[in-house]
Image (cartoon, rainbow, N blue to C red; front, side):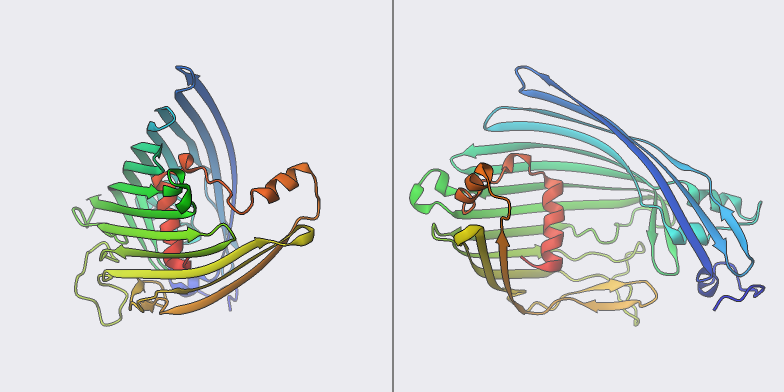
Length: 372
């Protein structure tokens, strides 16, 4: 496949397949917390040091091309102030984009050849994020979060199978409201009932380069979600969840009209709904049982995503799908702690105080992809 001495155009798909890549990294993380005002004010600060080195081996020419170390410090800090029912928080963090085989392999490797472009690829992708919000907790069973966030990208890399978009600067921002009510904390007769509703706005813009002023791909402007579930004292669970996702662009040029090949164009808005019925119970001798039957995409919404890699085109997503899960668990090492855990297993408490908007965004993505 890659005989030595063969001459192929640099950067071509066949030439890239004849590159072996290696990457190694080092990281160190330090963090400290300061408690003030009788622990009502908590300041957390830390720094993560990351260093990464890549190297490539050209099988056709029998040559190695080491890349210099890149990386640096990634600071993070957060401030929390609050009591038992209301809290305010503010956070900042910096992160690197994951190193890439493709971006390192296609850059010019001869000294002096388009060196400016080569250095642009070596420069790491950075993202600075600020998030602030208000949390309400245990107010008549109400848990709520009002959250705003801003993220600035420096040297953003968007990679396909055969090409890379380099965006020198872009930013995304948004606001989110999430409200959860557990009426069982007020009325014991409805213990086990959970209701949730939320809304998120996402804004984005390319700040420099060819696409200045355009929206970022894969950032829907509006998202709305809601769910309801109930768990009876004897272990029966029933629930439903619905989510609306607004239309979104799939490329930086913001093409509205799709191409014939399908990889470019808007991704239409869609609504996904799921429902499930389950049962979980403690069995003798330390065994536990959990069974769930449900349906994903209950409304049979026709929705799809797009791909711009070597298999570019429209990718149809899950239609209406029925599923059944059955699981058993057993505790082999028994003790006092295990007995206490089994006693409270049916209604394990959830620490909603630590939930953040970022965690919920990831959770919604998993739900869309894999279902409840």
